[in-house]
Image (cartoon, rainbow, N blue to C red; front, side, top):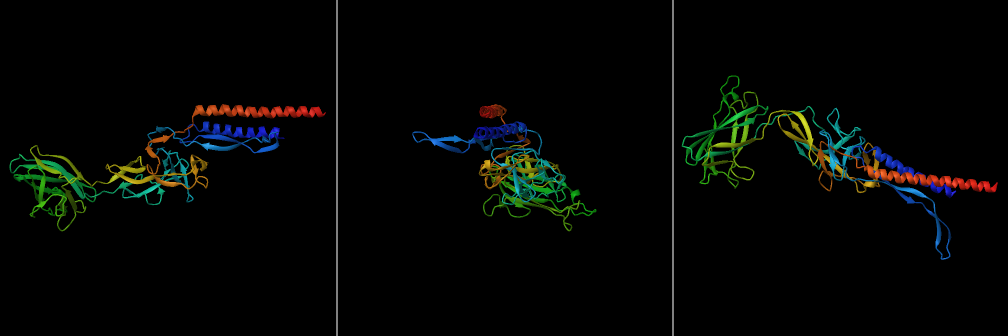
Length: 435
């Protein structure tokens, strides 16, 4: 009988609504959980006649659940202080490997490291991203599991370039010397202090001499100390470095034009051995005389001679200390030698129809024919979210809204239940009439 079937459809639909609200409230504290809303639609109608005006008389068959709509609005971002936690601020999902060659997607960034240093989710799925080779991320490469080199040792890098930002006092008397120094590293990561001595030889003219300590060359007592690397610097009337003569060579214009020079070769290679005292290879360093803008690093004006900065690209070996995730998803590792190196970049994905995503539990989603194929990209590109390290996205459940929906669903359930009891009473009265 329709009298019973119609309220029963209401009871079933209201039960779904109550379950949805209950599930939302149960997940109020679930990381990046997205609340749902149950939408109803009326069932088919049966025409039982028509009016005198020809209008159809139609009777409904009840109600059904039209959809359980997921709200993908942004949840609040809360700081956790945990380096493995990452929050998304904006659209998109983290890309996860399901272990079977496919991908799943999640907003929950409560990651951790497994025993191999892989970044994984709370249910053990690998977090995917773009690989990095020698610190350079390749966003055109296939996705790979993000691995943190916990316990790894970064190999040393021998110094190949250096620069010195300095001023030489133009008021100095001829013969005045100004000592300076820069620390460089050999192929084994040992530091060496290269002594640089400037000496004024004439107006606007200074000689330079660069040498490593004699002890750095002493191998098994053999005297293999090479001569210091020398040359001459000249300055124009404005105090700008104009020419450099390396060794006994001719003066060359310092600049970026064709035929100009921009650096001095400093080759610390002991004769016959080509190694330093500790067994490291000899140092071959390019002393850059210009900065990135093409301006000379060394000037000569009437003020105290001083070195304001030195720079070089070498470093000693270092032990892994920590990692961090940048706003673009770049994962960088810090070593005890103060160096940082990129080891990958977290990838993000989005789907054409978010309502079509299959909810798998554990905060994971899966694409299908309804959602469309996910598009993968880097954070901050193609409308994808940016990332915040040491933080997590909270649930977007609004308790006030949920309680309102709970009351509405409860009243609807009670009304449909009352309809069933009313129709039961009517049925009993009808049966009693027959008897």
